[in-house]
Length: 260
Image (cartoon, rainbow, N blue to C red; front, side, top):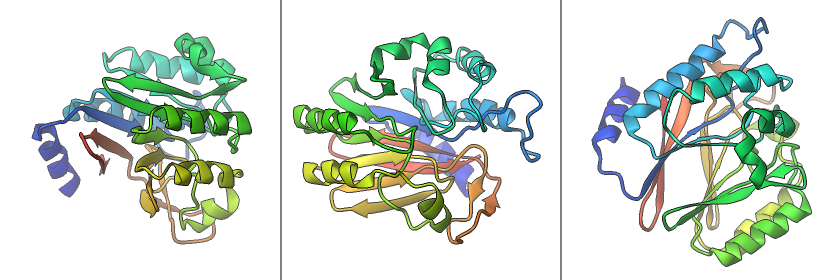
C-alpha cells in the first residue's frame, strides 16, 4: 500500500529538469528456459506499464538483460517490447550480456562502442550523464582514463550509471562471490573528483544506498527477485519486483525505489 501511495504522489509532484527510471537485472529468459516459477517476461512488461505514471523523460536498463547466457532471441523480444513505447531509453551491458548481439538488434549503440566496450556520455539539456561498461566484471584502464577526462571536462556531472557497484556494499554473498574485480582504480577517480556524484548500479539484486565521501552509491533492485543481503550464502529474500525513480534537480539528485 505504501509503495502505491508513493507512486501516485510522485506522479503529481512537480518535476524539475529531468526524471529517469532505472530498471536493472531484468534477466529475460529464452522461450522454455527455466525461471524458477517466475514469469520474468510478464514482470518486464508490467514494469514498462507501471513506470509511465511517473512521466519519465528517460528509461535506463542498466545491464543483465538476459537470464543466463546471452541469446539474440532475447534481445529481439526486448526490442519488440520497447518499440511499443515512445519513451527514450539507454541500454547497458551486464555480466549476462553480449555486446555484439545487442548491436545486432540495437544498432544505434554502435556509435558508443570503444575497443569492444560500451561507455559514453549523454547530454540532456545542461546535464551530462555517464554510462560505464563493467560487463566483464572489470573496468579497464582505457575506460578509467576516459572517465577521468570526462569528469575534468564536465565537472558538474552528477550522475553515473554502471552495472557493478564500484564499492563493496555490505552484502556478503555478492561482495564475496561476484564483486567488481578492479575497484581501486574507479574508486580513486570518483573520490579524487571531490564533487558530488550519484552512482546508480544493479547486479546485487538488493536495494541499498551507501556514501563514500563525495559519492552516493545506489544499488537498485531487480525486476526478477531480491537476494537476502544479510547472509553469506545465496538466498532469495523476496520475489517483489523493483525499480528506481531518479529526479535531477538544479543542485542535487534525488531517488526513490518502488516495488510493484
